[in-house]
Length: 233
Length: 233
DNA sequence: CTCAGCCGTATTGTATACAATAAATAGCAT
DNA sequence: ATGCTATTTATTGTATACAATACGGCTGAG
Figure (cartoon, protein in one colour):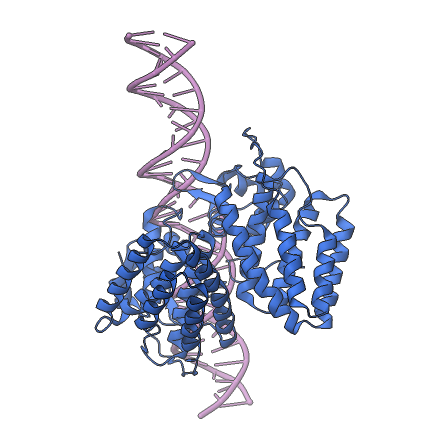
């Protein structure tokens, strides 16, 4: 179970606000454009604005949240151009991950991956939100197993931003990653066939990319309070 | 003149603390391991701990500063293993940058690059600190000209972390990037020869990598106050 | 009806106060 | 001296207070 390092980030209260918001964004409970008012979040998580502010700044640095001076924070709305940049970077980095992984993958690694796929299969039919998150975590897991912490961090960041892109430009809940493809990638890795794995991944990501059909972003003022409650702690 | 986006990051006061610290780190005025006490920094920059704290958190997210809960912040000391990860990621990403750039580079882009090299040449003999920074900025400039903002951000982050690595593991001030190599890369790009550019860059980075000869980190308690004064606005 | 300007409200920016934790020091016993 | 515990000091964690700014609605003139 990813995700990333509990590294630093102040007392665990701040961490939980950060993690809660992040999960809400990735599972598309909070949608691009939603206003993130410091008071509201603080009230729901039971912390002061100080903490909330730190969490928002961190999410902003990761590109999940857009903070404008004196105007506050909203869930980021990546432009099509940004989306392109993100996918290009993703290909570049995930290829490297697969190359490394095909060289050094162990049986234990494969076990971990298979186990994760099992999770995905279990969650898939019913639980929409978790399904979105799990599909992304597969990629994060690959990056972590590659052993390069820097690449892993970037994949983590990029995958979560892809969540935003899909929320904006894809029709609702067309599951972004078909599990079959994940299985095929594992098979290629087991055979230590980096090229096949890369080809699969490329196809996999291109399939996602192509779903970029501008859908009008509904602009209604959403009240995020009840949503936050589900993600507080 | 890089560097990166003034994007977000609260009122410009916080930005200047962040930028000042960052520059001090990159120019190796602040060395890995140095303690960054919030009060001290705030006093020197004339802001409250609130601002300093935000800046430190951001630097921490970028891997330049190490923040440990209840213990405070220090300049990061990348391990050899981390150093390896960083260089691997750097190669992977800079290759992509060069590939893109070789396709779409314009005469104006080349002008900008040549201009920057002129700066490097001027600063090189005398001004040590600025020279270090400028050498890195060449790579950041390449990434920005490639037009992919995500890759640009990662290059920015990685190059600055390389500064730390060199400070830790290289003998003092062996200039990390010979300007000649930068010129050769431009030439390759002008000829739209991506492969040659990549080969040059690989060699260039490997040369840097090889200077990883563990030098004992002098552990004396340094007083960073006077250093900070030079970087406060 | 439209639009400009004004005022009240909501929200963010920053400093500060206080609590909690860790580091440093001193005192004591062995 | 050496090691252990108590006490003081330094530093960080968090909440809150207040100032600055942006937002929304209202009024009135055209």
